[in-house]
Picture 1: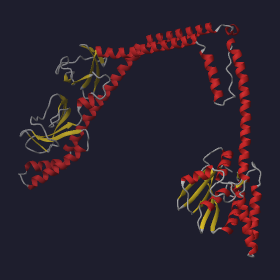
Picture 2 (picture 1 turned 180 degrees about the horizontal axis):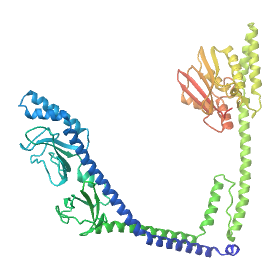
Picture 3 (picture 1 turned 135 degrees about the vertical axis):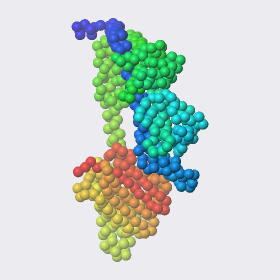
Picture 4 (picture 1 turned 135 degrees about the horizontal axis):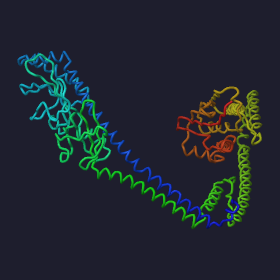
Length: 570
């Protein structure tokens, strides 16, 4: 069967793939949507309404509990009761004013510590007088404001109703508590919630923007309604003990009851409810059509073109352009591509061979250039060194001549090492020290070499002759009379950090770039003539990173050269 399929033409293959990729997803989508859409959307909306209504109920109950708790704190405070009784019995005097301030401060301490409390005051009902109000009140103040939400012993909860705070048009809840003080007239504590009932609670968690709310008392009578035209206050709401949802007068309703008897009901018009359902259904329909459209487009593309084989072949060409010559060539049973892939395989092999040859030639050329730099010792350096030895011999300083020629001999011997034969950090430091001793005879400077690594680490292999050009740069381009050169090696996070520092003239950024990118400094071919360019190139060749050497310099303050050698652990 597989053999027969391999013999099928490309046109028939595309037709089969097109039919399968269109019909099967379409059938699956239609069947799945038909059996699950209605149930999923209905349960989702019911769950969302119930969750939202439960959250609103909890918020209202917490607000009422907070107001009741604050009123209880005031009523049970012996200090407030005693001070309030004293204030009411005193005639106008300085003492009465002091007691007033004391009561006001204690009330503020209790009420302001609770962010859910708004207006608060003490009201003497017989005199229609209020005292210790936390905010300005409206002129038409009254203690009890319908609707009555919860009736209790010496404490009643009202609302929602308009706030009695001046310049405040919010709907709030309120608590009225009769204070237990031994006074001839009834004294009450009045507290309002600080939340805007409509904006902060009823509108904040709406599942649907057009949701309205009504509040029922324990007898299922409407005491607050946002739909007065249909559900007016004092109207009895239908009691359905089996379900907390239903329909009435063109609305879906969802009910949440409390342990204290009152309930809150959310209303959504049937047309709005169905609109939300239809939006979900339309979204799924769009998804189905989009899926079908994509399937058709893909099928047409496969029909009109050799999409898959050509795309694979294109990928192979791109990989070869990115120097990837080891990927598998696209395998296909289409006769038209067999000859093409064979030719491509042969061409790729030839190109890979040519690239390898070119890379090897470039490596050899780079090695020759670096070796040339390493062995191009400046004749002036040798002439000046030998001339110094001659004058030392004439002046009779035999020991100095021996030291000078011994150092020169060691440096030249070290310089003649073969390219590719790595040295060690220890050998590099010894070579640099010989060079510094030799130059110290001619120039007035001091030097210091410090190592902050272990004896095993100091034998780490490094390219030959990477420190001497750096030290030479400090002598000829940095130091002034009585200068100092410091050479140190320490271990960083992943590298050995070799630092060569002098306290000389410093260099400009232009000078630094010239030194790093020129084989020989043309203005003065001084020293051995190898130059920092050799160091930069040998580090790049060995470690493949162009940032292995950094120069930091400030004019008249000195120069720091940092070399980073990779450390792979002991």
